[in-house]
Length: 397
Image 1 (tube, rainbow, N blue to C red):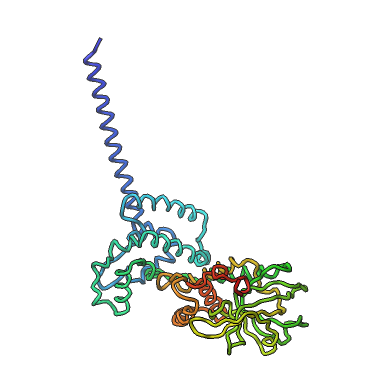
Image 2 (cartoon, rainbow, N blue to C red):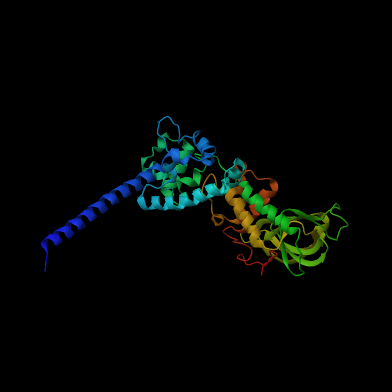
């Protein structure tokens, strides 16, 4: 039998539970938002010494901290999204940073400096992937008065605005924090490759590649102190013909231009240096077909030479050398502007383009030679020796 009193009691119970649930939800939501806001403060960001004693001090000297307009961009303004879903996703990612705090990953100045490059790259990648979303919370091309910018800055800003393809972080790395030593990455790769060459056991018939400029001899010398016959340039392929302890007899080749026989070029018509020959070596060169370059009317002749060199700074895996080149290119040419695709220019054009920017990069002569050859071998008209229709020694198939 239906009991109206029991029904009313049940109804009020449900209403009470619902009300309590709603109140609990509001309190929980308020607590969650309070926690979110608390973790979005500078005080929270610098509550650990890893941030307080390093990047925070750098930030305090930047224009984002103090400027004539009195507008300050705080840590979350640059590093935490405003929109709800991306913000929550970023907070979830931050739990990984808490783990590294407990693990002491960067708890000393030395550890922090060692990790600075990888940390910076991670932030830069995030900003690149999001089209510098956080920068655009305050800055927009539409609001810029280009007439009141410095001429060079105005030119770059308008180019980025009109052409697209670039984002704020491409040109503004290091705007609030010190730039890391970007050379450390490719130098470490170089050291690993050089170290690996010490245990290299060349096999007759295999192909090796030069990591750096190194001498060669026409005959097996008694020591490395003997006068050499010339030099092999970086990224030059060598076919192993014979092995004698730390020495290898190799064959290398490419093309010679009429009137410039001292130089062997990797590809016909392309000024990609493979080897520099001394007078005796020039006389020993074996020649193949001769052809006239359609663009310049210059005579080019296939050339090959056999000589001896040591296994030092020789690498069996060309992809590792290209990885080294890519790391060097990114570190040297990707800080002040977005990285120019190597296929934007022809191999011969890269010589002048790199030379124009040489004053802005900190590479020694050996590193610069490697970088130039790397971008040339990956240029618009090469794309690597195989893609250019050549064999490993640079001769036409």
